[in-house]
Structures are given as structure tokens and as C-alpha cells.
Amino acid sequence: AQKVTQAQTEISVVEKEDVTLDCVYETRDTTYYLFWYKQPPSGELVFLIRRNSFDEQNEISGRYSWNFQKSTSSFNFTITASQVVDSAVYFCALSESQFYFGTGTSLTVIP
Amino acid sequence: DTAVSQTPKYLVTQMGNDKSIKCEQNLGHDTMYWYKQDSKKFLKIMFSYNNKELIINETVPNRFSPKSPDKAHLNLHINSLELGDSAVYFCASSQVGTRANNEQFFGPGTRLTVL
Image 1 (cartoon, chains in turn red, yellow):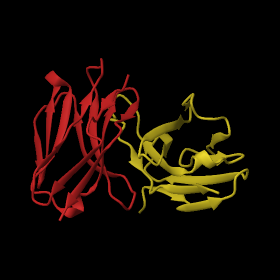
Image 2 (tube, helix red, strand yellow; image 1 turned 120 degrees about the vertical axis):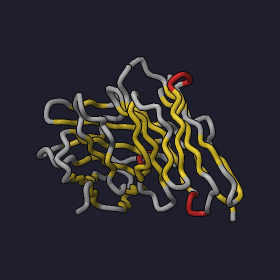
Image 3 (cartoon, chains in turn purple, cyan; image 1 turned 60 degrees about the horizontal axis):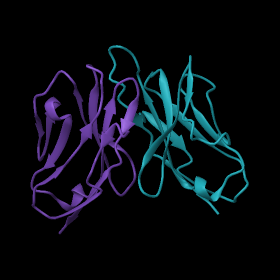
């Protein structure tokens, strides 16, 4: 069974639109961490955020925001007023005893 | 200042050859990893290694072997390269422990092309 599910394989939006990338995880641990990474076309993996399982506060960083809901095992990522530079593959990940990546969501922002 | 470095960045080679990719981390982490990213962008863990334990993903062919001369290095050796080995290989490191969150710090990747 997939530990981290990113059901959206590809998303295209027009610049300035808001977009939400979904992430659903599965774990029996009470202590775990969730992450989002960005992989732009240049190929490197860029860390965006880390969240521990005891902190359900939503976080906002500029145009980026994250909604962590333990009740639905989701850790969704929203980009507000998207820009072309946001075009990338975004990976959600879960860390418990091991580290698990989702399959990624490829976001294309059309100018 | 580079936290996790890999060499080479690009590697083009013929089928059947043996090649190595080097990885070094200067973060003082206790665990290092190799990931393979295929053309569909799936990130698959191949190995995790600390000075006590090597964990191998059972789906990885035994042509792939990690070699760690010390805590800061984990090199990847590939024997008898096949076309299907073409991918981007990422090295990563993390600090694993009860108070650590196991955040993965990635190298820039090595794009391997087997002809």
C-alpha cells in the first residue's frame, strides 16, 4: 500500500490562479513528520516545509500555505496567485521509521 | 559550503560498463541514502546506510552496491550497466534518531545515460 498518495499526477493552471496540491498519508505511528519538496526543471530537490505530527497549525509562507489535518491524514499545499516559476514537480513525503515519498504532482503554470 | 555533493553531474556510458558515482556530505549526519528517479519522476529509495546497518531495497539488482569508506561518504557502484539503469540518481543524508525528524538533504543528482 502506498504510504503517501498524491492523486494528482499533473495539474495545469493559468498564471495568478490559486492551486492546491493534495497529499494523503498513511501511518500508525503517533510521532511522524511530513514534508513537501519542490523539483524545478533544473532537477534539484528543494525542501519547502517540515511538519511534525503534533503541530496541526496551518502554515503560511508568502504565497505558499499548508493545511495539515490529522483527521483526514492530509497535508495539502496551496500556492496562491501562481507564477510561471512555480512550475515544477512537487513531492509530499512522510517520515516515520523510514522516509516515504509520494509519486509527485507535476504543476505547470501557463503564462 | 555544499551540504551534500555528488560527482559526476552527468555520466554517459556504454551498456556493460562498470561505473561509480561519489557522494559526500558535510552535515555530520549519521545516515546516507541513494535514490533513483526514473523518467516518470518516481523517487525510489535504493539503499540507506549508517555505520551500523545497510538496508537494501529488495527490488534493487545486485549489480548495484553502495560503498562507504567513512561516515561522510557513500559511493554507488554499478556493474554491467543496462539500458534500464538510465535515470537520475540522488544521494541524500539525514540525522536519524529519536529527536531527529529524518529530513532528507539531497545532493544535486547525477544523470546517468546508458547507451
